[in-house]
Image (cartoon, rainbow, N blue to C red; front, side):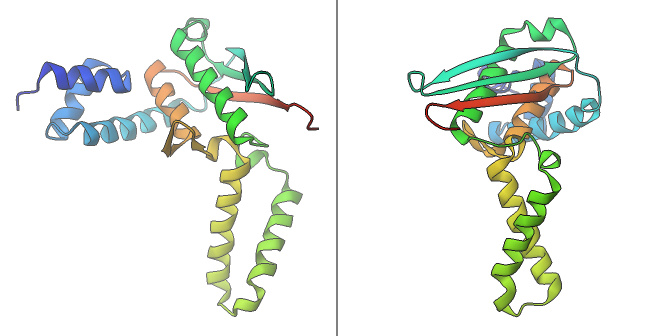
Length: 198
């Protein structure tokens, strides 16, 4: 199949992934750019998973001020090397994460950071709401898990739909950058300040 240079260029610009990878994905998708992006995201996520256990000793602290000084965010984003930490695209990633925190106001980074007592309290509330439904226990358990996942989407940064593309979660947005840079990236901590709120 003959691929146009324009199509290849567009895919490269939209994903930031190498020409060879873009060419393979376009061939695999039969020239459909949206399918090619999906293929690259799946491959990138698989590659990113392999790197997620690696140590992250470099990175940067990014400061973002929103709404004329009404909301401020400090976020520490770590990577493996100083080379990536100084990269303009890495700074853009940190900025996007800070903007996400400003807009969506997460309380924790990931579900594993939510204290056990808060999870238990949330489960109690959900089970109390379902008490009168007279559904079988296994169905109630599935509903509880579904509602708990929704709760994580609200309070955990990595589980939130990404503000610039709500079809993906913040976790997946970061994973595309792990695949792109070839090293692990981790949000270590953040603080969000809103004028007049504790």
